[in-house]
Image (tube, rainbow over the protein chains, first blue to last red):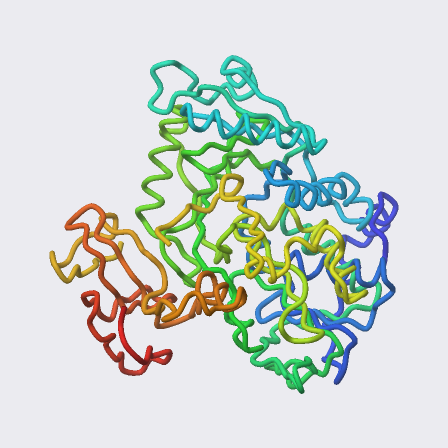
Amino acid sequence: MRRYSIWSLLRNARSYHEGWPEMWRSPEPKPEYDVVIIGAGGHGLATAYYLAKEHGVTNVAVVEKGWLGGGNVARNTTIVRSNYLSPESAFLYDKAMELWPGLSRELNYNVMFSPRGLINVGHSREDMIELRRRVRALQLNGIESSMLTTAEIAKKAPILDCSPTASNPVLGGSWQAKAGIARHDAVAWGYARAADARGVDMLQNCEVTGIRREGGRVTGVETARGTIRARKVAIVTAGHSGVVAAMAGFRLPLTAYTMQAFVSEPMKPILDTVVMSSKLVSVSQSDKGELVIGMSTEPYASYSQRGSLPEVERAAQTMTELYPCTRRLRMLRKWGGTVDVPVDASPIMGKTPVENLFINVGWGTGGFKSIPGSGFVFAHTIATGEPHPLVAPFGLDRFASGRLISEHGATGALVHGE
Amino acid sequence: MLLINCPWCGPRDEIEFNCGGEAHIARPADPAALSDAEWAEYLFMRKNLKGLHYERWHHSYGCRQWFNAARDTVTHEIHATYKMGETPPVVAGADGIVKGSSS
């Protein structure tokens, strides 16, 4: 890997930037790998990187049906935070939070991590009770978070309508200073480049069509580019987790929904923090000046990767109520991603009914922020064959034991009829 | 925008409805005899199909009746809606047909 620095920038400037090498190779699949990771999204690439770096496992392939980083890692609203309620989630998400500040240096790739703080706004008495409960739970777990008054919110986010006559009155909120945003594509590319440099093969346009098993043990995967044998296989998909799990003969306690987002035309800086609300999932302003607006999950199962109009209408209406100055703002584009939401809105990580087949799925609406931590602890799980202490509570066995980790309050997933 | 044909009220806009997830999950005949893992299968595990999906819908802002729909989870096309207790319709050219009795 040729390192990026001011010197390499100057050197390449002399040749009109035509001499930069490709960030990763596009190798032909080898017949056999120690570990095959299904899914070259943020979590899969981070897992591959930490497998190589922390555990010296470099005979690894990441197989991807489309192109690298083209799924949910490219479709999220780039928010990074660690404000989950239960101790299990609090520590898991905080592991990622611990790695974010050093990530650009670690990967020699600028992920543009910007810890600009995050406000969760409460619009009702119930919202405020829930926010206070979550802040106190975080404080008990030693994770930084505090409450804000309406006046403090008005100062941090002046474009938010904090007047007493607002349709959605701002009664107060919670605050996390270390939260923020990062450049989502750069996270995928940075991990891919760093993993490639350590010998990991990125196999794009290589859809997995079957999972080979012998006597209850995984032996490889069938792909669009032929059969690949593997000692260990890890399912690190988003959205299609249920489809891939079915190839290995088991079901998962989750449902795939569409989640939408849209961005406005760019404008001068008007919001220097991230604002989340129970009415509209999230708003932040990108470095280009666009407002990035995240919506809730759609109310029915879907793999369509495009959102429905009622949700756009609802979100646009709420947006103009909360931020009256955006009424004449034009929207540049909107898109949808498929999120797999488990019944308790917490990820599923660890072993599966098939030996040597590992799983890291169900990040639902909150996968992006957890990429570094998830990759770190899941790599440990694959390398040692036993769940990392932070992963252990998130196993598939929790649905039989009844130790569910309910995090519906911390995510953008609506609680549906089921 | 989906136009959903409520078996009781006729075609109505999707915003009048709520989806209740996978249909035709039979409650175990003898719940007391189930192991924890079997309970988890019944309570939590879902087919989560890509393609034809039989699911329950509720006409929440209409007649408030529950009914079933055969809907494609990729195209969102609704092939059929039918009342609770009726046999799920066979959709030509689609796989994942539910066998057995209704719920």
